[in-house]
Image 1 (cartoon, rainbow, N blue to C red):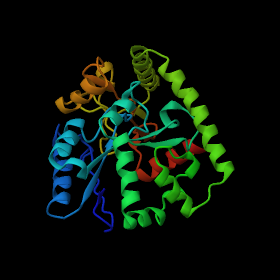
Image 2: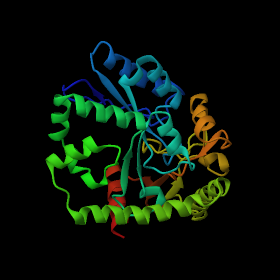
Image 3: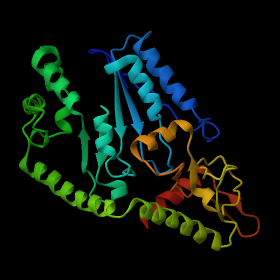
Amino acid sequence: VCVGGVRPVASTQILLRDYKTGALKAPGMADAEVENVVTEALTSLGYGVCVVHIVIGTKTGHQLPSISCVNRLVRQFGRRVVPVVDACQGRLQEGSVQDFLDNEMCVLCTGSKFYGGPPFSGAALISNNHAHELETMLATSDQFRRLVETSKLAEYFDAPLMSDMLPGVTKAIQQSREPTLSTVRAVCLRWTLALHEIERYHAIPQLQLDGIIREWVREVRKLITDLGTPCIQLICDKNGETVTSPGHSTPSTCSDDDTFMCHKSDLDKELDARYHPGKGDEVVNTIVSIALKHGEKNPTALTLNQYKLVHRLMAMD
C-alpha cells in the first residue's frame, strides 16, 4: 500500500503462486516483484511512503516478502518504507514479535486463529521510534492532525485501549467517538483469555511443538490414505509440497515427511537465522490438500461449484 501526503491510497497485491497454474514462483521472483513495485511507487509514481505488508507464520510455511527484501528496501529508501509484519497467523517462536519491533517493524497480531483464543482479540504494535514520530507529527502538523481526527481510526480502536506512549493519538480518537465501557471491557476480557492460550502454547518447548504439528499432518494424511477410495486423494506436487490449486487434478503419492515440509530459499533462511535460531532449513506445511471425485465405477472430479457446495455443507455440519 503506497501513500503520499493526502493523495488516495493505492495497493498492489503480489502473489506467492502463479495465478494460472497455482505453482510456486521461483525463489526470489516474488521478492523482485515487491522491489519493483515499491521502487516504482517511490520514484516515478511520486508516492511519499510505501507500507510493505509482510505475511509471517502461514499455514504453508512460506512468507512474502522475505526479510532480506524488506531490509534492502529500507536501506535504499529509509523511513519512506514502513514494514508491517502480519503475525496474525501466530506460528512464531517466542520473542519474535519483540525482535520485529526492535528492528523498526510494525506488527499486527491476534490471540485467535492458531492460538485458539477468542475472535476479535487483535492488536497493532509499533516501535518506540514510530510512536515518537507519530506523536511529533500530531503535535507539529495541523493538517496531519485533522487527517487523523477525521479518519476511520476510531472505528477500529477505542481511546482507553491506546498505549500511554500515544497521548496525541488517543486525543485524536476521542475527538471522533466517545468509547463505550462495555466495548473496552469486552476487548480486555478477550485478550485475557487469549493470553492464557498463548502462554500455554509457548510453555511447550519449540522442538516438541514442531513434532506435534508434524504428527498431526502425518496422521491426517494417513487417515485419508487408509480410506482406500479413489474418491478422496491427497494432492502433492513433484517437489513433495502440497499443492493447493484446484487445477492439479492428478494427485501423486504422499508418503514421507517431505510431503509436508517446505524447503526454504536462501532469502527465507536469513529470517530464521535472525528470528528463529536453530529451527533448521525446513518449515512445516500444515495444509492438507485433497482431490474429491464422485461415482462408483469411474469416479470423475468435482466441478468448482460442487467443491463450493461441499465446503458449504462442511461448515453446516
